[in-house]
Image 1 (cartoon, rainbow, N blue to C red):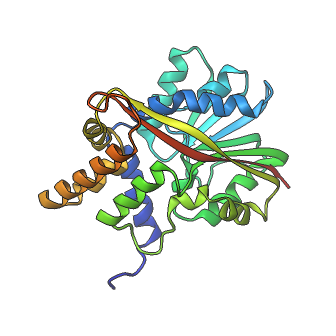
Image 2: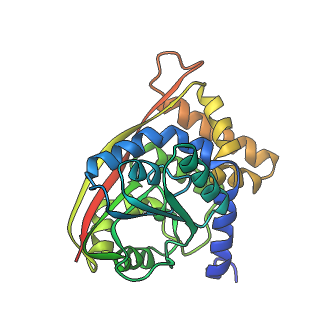
Image 3: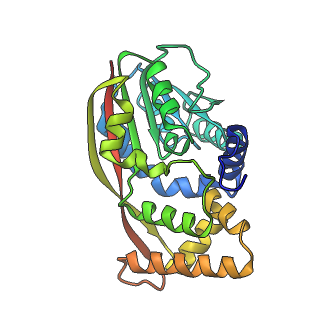
Length: 274
């Protein structure tokens, strides 16, 4: 019936196709330095067993492996896993990349000392299952660290704009709620203690105009590419115009004709498995 929730299998299939569209590896290069800084702040000891959930191309897995952790990355997009393997091999690092769903991780209970996720697990459609799985695969006393786009961020605004032009399936909660501190505390309360949250600045620094940035995301960022594909030509033109207005309005670069610099932010969340 109109407005009713889609079967979860259909939602999951669409999500997998979305993240395999475009080439997220190109987009991920822009946040690789921020990902390395995120890992550095955690001070994870060498030898720790670490899981990167919704790992993409390995932005967290690679620096974890570099500092001597035993690393596994899991993601639903197999093309991104292959890129992660290639990155690890090129860097001479050891890391395992496996297909895995944040809501149903293919690992035994209490398998890892550390679980991390950056702009990844937040997109799974059922947050209560994600929270339960993050707790389940951690050893008691193990550490969780998440980096989640928050609602007030530029990325939050971009997602809201996308939802305005292409409404999401009914019944799904906005992914950026994982970046709302009160919501995160509520979701993690059953399985974790010592929950801490802090907003961290991250820049989108692109050598192109805001219009070029929109075209760049439209080509390489799966969610944007798929959203455009669902619109007719008039709808695409309207969406592009709104995105260009958003990017132009947030651009702090001194020469906006060739440079886009967006001050973005995410919520860093750390917690200890109870």
